[in-house]
Structures are given as C-alpha cells and as structure tokens.
Length: 300
Image (tube, rainbow, N blue to C red; front, side, top):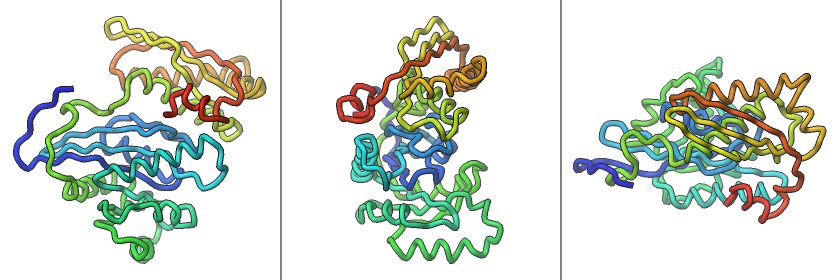
C-alpha cells in the first residue's frame, strides 16, 4: 500500500478501544470515523474480530481498533480466542480507550481494567453520559474509576449522539506518536467489502432474532461479485439447530426477508452502490467448539 508523505509533526498510531461487553465500543468507533465498519447490537459477543477503523484529519491519522468485549464467563474456545484478541491488541497499541458506562462500574469492568498495561497512555471514556439525569454524579463516578488507574485523560461522551467526540479526539491526538500515515487519506478500514458484508448480515440477524438465537450463529459470504457499481452477494447464515433455522426464517419467511432488506440497505450505503443480496440458512452445529472450527470460519 502506497501512502502519501506527511509534513513534519504528523501524528499516527493505533488506538485500542476496550471494555466489557455492551458499553458502546463499536458505536464509538463508527461515530469517530464517520462510517459503519463495526457492527452493533445489544447482544453480547457481537464483535468477534479485531476490526480497524481509520480516520485522517488535519495533521493526524487515527487507527482505531475495535476489540471484542472481554468475556468473564463461559471458558469455551470462542471466548478464549476473543479474550486473546483483546490482550494481544493492548500490548501493540499506542493509545488505549477504556470505555465504561456512566454510573455503572462493576466486576467485569474491573477485570478489564486490570489488563491495561502501565506503559501505554490510556484515556478513560465515560460513555452514555447523556443518560445520567443528575450530572453532578458524573464527577464522583469519574474520580472513583480514576482512583484505580493512572489515566492520561478523562472524557465523558455520548457515542450515539456524538457528544464530546471532538474533545475526545483532541485528547487522543496529543498522545499519538509522530509518524507518517499508514493508510491512505480516504481509507476507513483495513477490512474487505466481503468481510463487511458478512458482518452487516450478522448484525441484522442478532438485532431481529433477539436473545433466543445462540451466539455461535454466524454468517459466511459464499460469493461476492462486482459488475461496475453493482455488487452481487450470496450469503449463508449458519445456525446450530433446525429450531434456530425456523426462528430466523420467521412466519412465512417474514423475518428472513427483513434481515435481507435491512442488510442490503446498509450495504448500499456503505459501498455507495446497488446491491443484489441473497441469503440462505444452513444448520451446522459445533463449529465454535474447537480451535479447528474457529480457524475454518476466520477466527485466527
């Protein structure tokens, strides 16, 4: 990849976004870069891969790394691999964003906090600050968390409403090392369109089917073709049981149709062009129960 040279003093680095599940890490990254490259859902374990989002603005390039939420229960192979992704990312980052939910700090947050390396500058990001009715409670909460670690900065934000995100990026930029840019000025992610398509379908799957669908359900792109601006995408949803297949299909196919429609609309927005999308469902149990199965479906 050829990247343009930058003037002296240009800053560029990797920023790890970490925290327990469902504190808004993926929403935060998407809002920071201004595009949806990491999927969001209320369901835990939605983010399974390390995903980079890139933003170049002014004299800096921010390379955000959205990590899976650190899993504190269920020591199965998938969770162990997710946690390994988190710990590996922490050690290779230039800056860490430790994301917590305003007014809510508990055991799982503490477990993630204990993983933070002492030699990497860390910003405490207090998300969902807009949901705290009594704003006077934010300061003692921030002080409570800050007493547990030496943070380089503390920034209350609302990722979903873009509140204080400019202030957050200003603090991050101060901590980035002076480096030439790694990506081009228009790049927004290191992931392929094929990967992003599978993630979009998986997001809609969890959003529309709900908590009843096991976390081991996943999506494969069997064929991805491009003709001019048109993309033809053929996806397969893998589920564990026939009963799960029925849940995804829904009454007279209504739920599968909605998954397909919402996925297609998101893809057309992200890829800036028309999309023809077909989705099938297959039953394949046990793929996440061992290391070989995880590697087969892209969990390196």
